Amino acid sequence: MNCLAQIITKIIDFFYPPFRRIMSEQLFRYAACGGGNLVLDWVLYFLIYNFVIGHDLVYYQLPVTHYQFCLTPHIATLCIVFPITLLTGFWLQKNVTFTQSDLHSARQLVRYILIVAVNLAINYFGLKLCVETLGWYPTPSKMAITLVTVAVSYFGQKYYTFRKSR
Image (cartoon, rainbow, N blue to C red):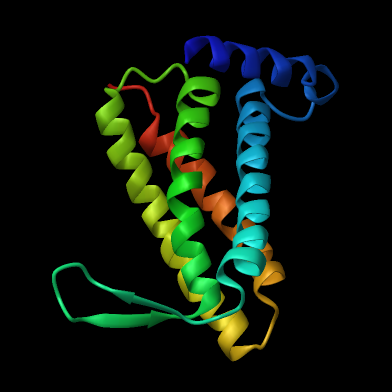
């Protein structure tokens, strides 16, 4: 996996020189990795919402119980896409952007999950507000909410998840 991280880093760094005056290399790598993961998130969300879930309510029964609950299609899609982009985002940020952190990987993952949990709450309540209260379409709503979570993620990851130990 280090080889893949090195290849991705070299590709990102190739495009960095024109941006040298306006942002640090780390911020550029964060933007590139986060942007790639963001596009993956949006594409998966669109495809799953429109072609897998099919705009239908999703009923789920908990294993070994008779308890069943219902998810709206936009929230069910979020539940499917979220774990995928959680793992790809962590891997990219750990191995490409914030490589200087000497914290143990397990600690980084737990911290990353905490930051992502905050973002998940922002996504959940944001989708509820935008789609169910304001009547916006789900995909543009998800895109707008993502702009808020990008800022939360960057500062949380830089100063908490992947910081250097003291």
